[in-house]
Image (tube, rainbow, N blue to C red; front, side):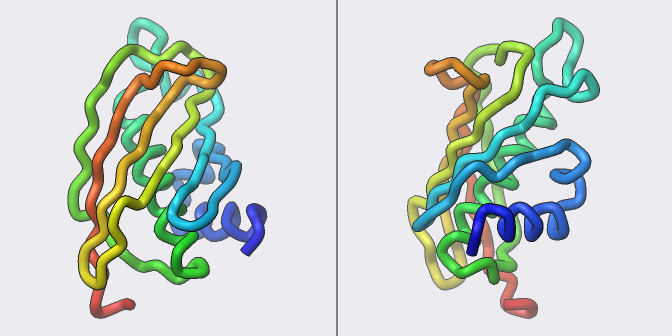
Length: 137
């Protein structure tokens, strides 16, 4: 699967990701890197990227990481998502680096690190678990 094909799958599967302009930069073997472009609509008072936008980006990034293990055929559903906000991100694009830690038959677990583009220090750390949807899988 190419980056362009994955991008199309993401925008079809999560239309909000398309509306926000989320970009798939890379993915392979349970890892994915996505980019959320800077949008004034996604800022909160004080000029930082809002928590809901960061959580949405992290959720989509983990889905792409899972899709990278299944050839684009993963219909898992988010079972939990816990985010720790470490610092206010600069008002610019945000990069999400997702990694599947365990891919199980019924439950998968992963983590996502979020950074403002161009910065080394993370602005948030996410842990998430995903349940296989037995009716659809």
